Length: 254
Image 1 (tube, rainbow, N blue to C red):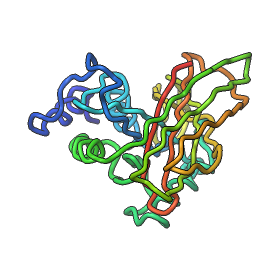
Image 2 (cartoon, rainbow, N blue to C red):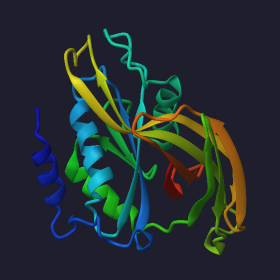
Image 3 (cartoon, helix red, strand yellow):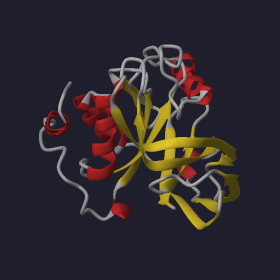
């Protein structure tokens, strides 16, 4: 099992590209969406979960605002342990990346960067390379505002700026609600006896609608999701339905 320090070292191996960016002005950085397809039933997944935590908390890529989601798949649930955070929705989303966008198979752990690059989720060097490619892509600014929470009910407004370079283009707007951090005692399966920790655990992923990219737009939404034990976050992103590329993403802590 690789240690946390080895993951940090792997991230820093990309010459001059990775340094501590936590003190950068977040508004000046390019937002990048990282989706980790993972499972508590998979013994190879905890190192990827820890790498995602580093990327989320340390923000180690200069010029990038890393916005992460853990999406727990359910196809490991028959191997002795049912992942309490798993959903067939995330399995289907991962399968779509393979079927529609020619990713290299379905496996865990798999990290998908901006819907463009997919690779083994514990590979720090691949993460470094993919993130640096992603920050060179044009992004449409997204703002999450008017956020309220009343018990389980969350409401907010998503605002998108117009971008004439995408004239005639359309994209799907998604909203995710994720728990900031959760822990789980695994009793059976490949990780039996371990205490596993996860960040940005997706509890809900919803299509809010389709947007015209060359026109400013605003979408209101409300969903019912119980509060996470350590707080929650909203992630809004727009995705090209043809290429799978993420064209804009934003995050707001609750």
